[in-house]
Image (cartoon, one colour):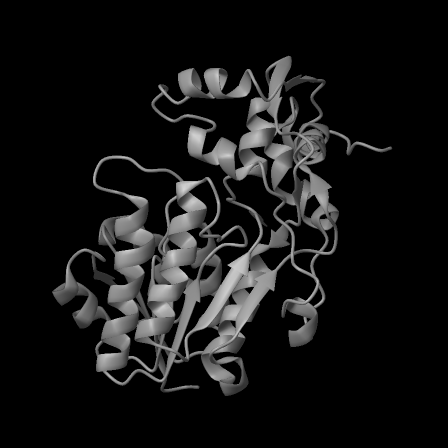
Length: 314
């Protein structure tokens, strides 16, 4: 492992930063490929001097992708978007971009490709996000049949975009709940990183698809309540009827940073849990990290008195 080079596309985000930190302890060299290198400087101190290199790469620019992949032993593609805006479109990123990475990996004879998809990937879905993720998996497999596909449920951990948002929103006295009964299986970011690291070295994982979920299943409403509880906030949660939800979400979508989009509302029609017959954490000998053991470590910042407030019981 000491001399191997692992290239990570999208390695400066929430999952990527954790992956780089963990990988730096076991891998020789890491190349982090991002659109804006200046936004990724925080990953360089996560390893030894010179161990982590940051390079510019845009999935819409094949030359930059090829340059980033050149000389790698393994490639991990984490690039994904939750909503479309400007030039960032689902099809361009999740399908065309994923295919570009996979195809160039095959052309250059790369040993291992790990592709992060999503548990909700489904071509039959009403949501464009889910459709694009499923089509992206197919495109990757066509170009690089031995690629390992990782499908996580919602991911939690310091810096996540879900529980942090719920806890921050809990400062309001009333919060709307859309599709509150939809089930999720939150998985810890450290466990996701561990699976990806295993996939870069374990040939038995090549060509397989892994669905990653945590130890417990929660409804969306329960996750929102957990975040509010850890933030020590009293919130009145109001369930929005399905026939009204699209209209409210439409107007919320007009905000600069909307809390939910119409496409995400469609995603909420389907439970986001691991299928019973799918390969997952247990098959890799990984015990899922408990949500309750991690949330207090980073949601205390939203408490009225910060981290020094007494923990909530009951």
